[in-house]
Length: 241
Image (cartoon, rainbow, N blue to C red; front, side, top):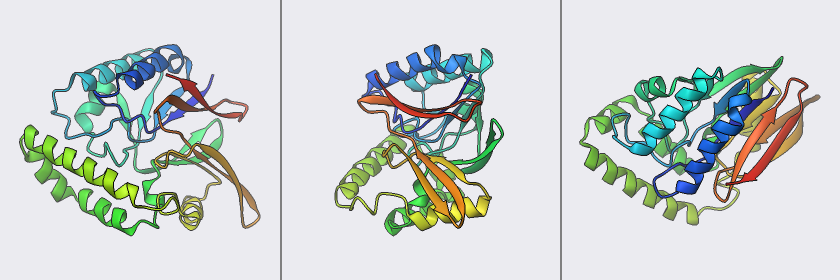
């Protein structure tokens, strides 16, 4: 048996191949796992649980079926789908976790998160993040008509793409000091996150302790999954969609 971690699928109506790959992954691999953790950006965008989107229904049904077969699914919000709420979680039978969570994986404590809060060299994004995570702003947005929310979300995505083209590679990656601080704050030596789309396993030494940070890959041309088994074997792999 294994515990599985994925992130950054960015599911949308415009990428049916990724959706088909994810559904196949649930049916062929995740169904045999001890648990599945989704560390954010399952969807390209989310404008509210009340959005009558067939894709959302299909994913909710697939995750619900996974739960019914004995595999729990845990979800941490990403920067794209941070508005996923309790209603969708209930339909999907997912457990919503705090944005920084320490979990036990076969006796090892691991810090899991989406990863965007580690990118502290991008102050503009952090300011924007604080703004959109304001509960009052979120309530106002969710009270707007769906068509207006769709327009706003589309505009924000276009602005984000333009902005990212002008940012340096360093700015869009995690800050090493932020990584060390997070590990020390949570008193762990293992971290798993997504967001940067730079899959890798990083071994490092903090003080005299060996630590490890695993970065999950995005699902573009290939799927990406981290597998951890009871023997502490870690396998970060990609597979064709």
